[in-house]
Length: 414
Image (cartoon, rainbow, N blue to C red):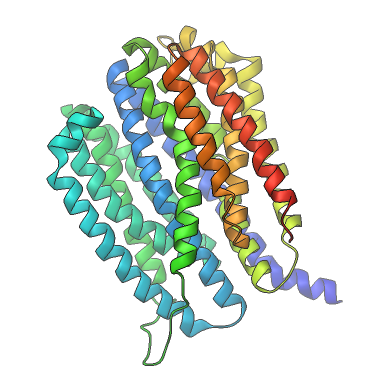
């Protein structure tokens, strides 16, 4: 009887997690559709530039993702112990800090856009868009983290779908209107703003204005630690896409960008599982319950989902490249997509590890991600002059990082 009651109590959370997994994969399909559309609408050098811009945005967003993951951990912890007023105080006080701090940084970036654009090889208008996306991505991430911590997975899934769907539609419309790379990236910027509006609507009624005497939990140290860990992970996963236009010839850079785009299927397919893992791990950790069983289940699920994608790339590289990237890219992409698919699988597993360590508050593993990023950057700059070498280098470093992170895990308790 007790087991039955426990199952009934858990069923809403399990159903919510299942919906989130479905919603995130719908969003991933839409996001991937955006990449495929742009692959066909833009010239190879333009698409390589777009992928490089998105690598910068992903690094920016992954640095910002610390807001979501840290907010989710804190809110899940306070919810688990019944501190409703602490949740509201945290959401209001830290939400205001996020808006002010990222707004100030965005203004500086926008004002220095001509200089930064010249240094990074981006058109100045896209640097301004990066600045705008910084604010909206930070606000979206924080609000999504509060929803995640409250286990409101339905609204969270809807926000992901809204962002991916509007990016596809707006990006395609703006490119077809003649705005090129700026239009493609502009659509993505507007989409982030729209997804923040969705999360804001979802939080109405869930988070009240704090009353006099309500105190927000201290989150500064956790934010800093999570920031370091997730930023180093983001740099590790995206540095090759950032460097490809500088290290490779234009046609090769376009082919490598297409392989990176295909690899994102394996990398982002299990994102919903990572979101569920953080909320569940943080709650269990707060209550002193075991956290490892959920980790093992999520690792196994990611291995199956992303592993299936990588297996297709290994067994049918030319067919997969022809279907996803098109005939123009297929011969060059087929030579590297198998290797890159396995690297993307490894990076998807590393994302699970990173989220788990944030959930249990063990953040010193960030050192492993930092050393991996430095090693990969140095190896690419020194040795990578063709797409095959670049993909093999990425694979070797990410597999070595798996070993280091697993060793760190064996020294933890939970």
